[in-house]
Image 1 (cartoon, helix red, strand yellow):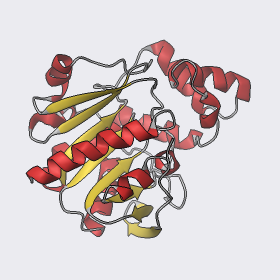
Image 2 (cartoon, one colour; image 1 turned 180 degrees about the vertical axis):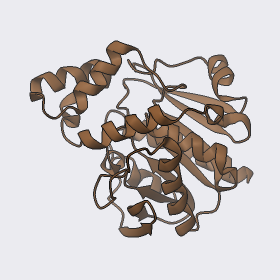
Image 3 (tube, rainbow, N blue to C red; image 1 turned 90 degrees about the horizontal axis):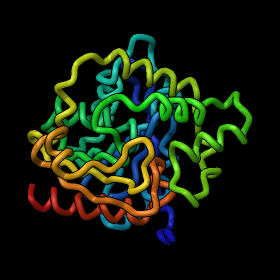
Image 4 (cartoon, one colour; image 1 turned 120 degrees about the vertical axis):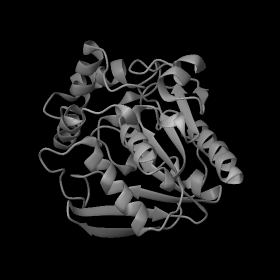
Amino acid sequence: MTTAQSPAWEVHLLGLTSGTLEVITMGAGHPVVLLPSLGRGQEDFDGVAPLLVAAGLRLIRPEPRGIGRSDPLRPGSTLHDMAADVIAAMEAERTGPALVAGHAAGNWVARIITHTRPDLVAGCAMLAAVTGTTVAPEISRAIAGSFDTDLPAAERLEHLRRGYFAPGNDASVWLGGWHKDVALAQRAAREATTDRAWLRAAENRPLLYVAAAEDAIAAPPSEEELRDALGPRVTRVVIARAGHALLPEQPDATAAALIDFARRIFSAA
């Protein structure tokens, strides 16, 4: 059970050419940038964030476009545009080299930042993430059904159980928190991103792959498969009793993996 008290936090509004971006900051110490999954906001990290702050880390949490006070993603945007927003937040906060952690679809942005701005990255973490940019069609339907807030709650709950949660875990905790328009815009940005060089983010920076043992969307790859897909500087942690949602299912274990990785990369810097 998570026992850390909620730390103090600040909200900053950045006026960028791409529109206003809301950024939450918390804590002090080595910087960690948190990037949430498809169609979801920073609230998903609320169970993990106090543990990271208690471990002496400073959190930078950009709210995805279309959520909170962040202006919507503009038509024609790519994943590189989404990464540019996060880079702008890192530069505004003067993070220096940070641990950049992306949950599920958020890992694409984390890897692009690692590839294009290695000067800003001490290490990259992928949490319950596919190593490529596609998933099986039946799983894609479960994802779409999960964020389709026009569907009845009971139907969406079945999609959540199928795609996101390990058997026996309470999928209803994710019935809220979805932003359909945001998810559709982010999917369009992914489809508009044609280059693939950034996928191998572990070529020149340490990368932590946090696998959810019962992930229906991204079944845990072997370490050899990860090296082949991501590059040589990858390590793996597998978290039991968790699916693709991961954060609400196992916040303590997820935080522990990030804290251990942060200590290793910052001590080596």
